[in-house]
Image 1 (cartoon, rainbow, N blue to C red):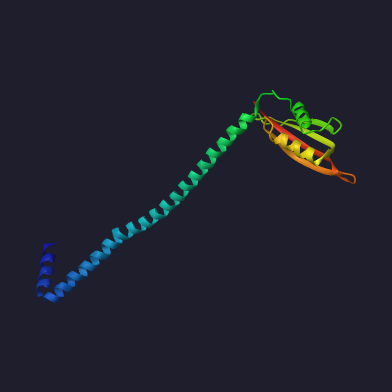
Image 2 (cartoon, one colour):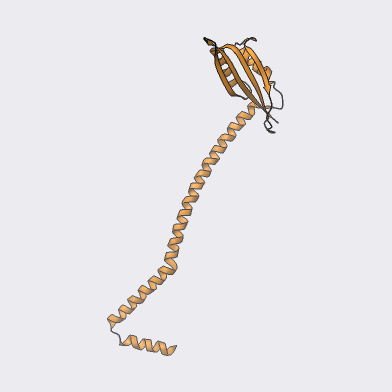
Length: 185
């Protein structure tokens, strides 16, 4: 090994200073390419990958913040609705709807039927549904009844509503709708 080094030193001594500088410059360039290929380029590629990953995580965190905000808003709405839902079977929906009909100015002849429908199977919030049929009501009475249902002390939902005019009298209406209420189990 020392012989090889001595031969190399002898060869370098025979070269002119200009040739020696060219060799040094060539070795520096080879060294630079080696350093660039082994360390710099892999670090740059890793940096690009990390930048893309950071952007993705930032987008996901913004999405998560929006979802969390929506969840808090929905939880607030749920608390408000749960206040309106009665615990257990404390409210008779049939009686309540008849009272609301009376408040809306409907008389007993106009209330054709109030029929209970089968309850839902939801164990946490059982739904009770009632089908109501009105005959010969005015638009003012129907609107007043729907307003009373909307502003009732309980959480009531009008599930379906069908209004037809009676004969040639456009002011007299036949109305059919279903109303649902919920209970807390």
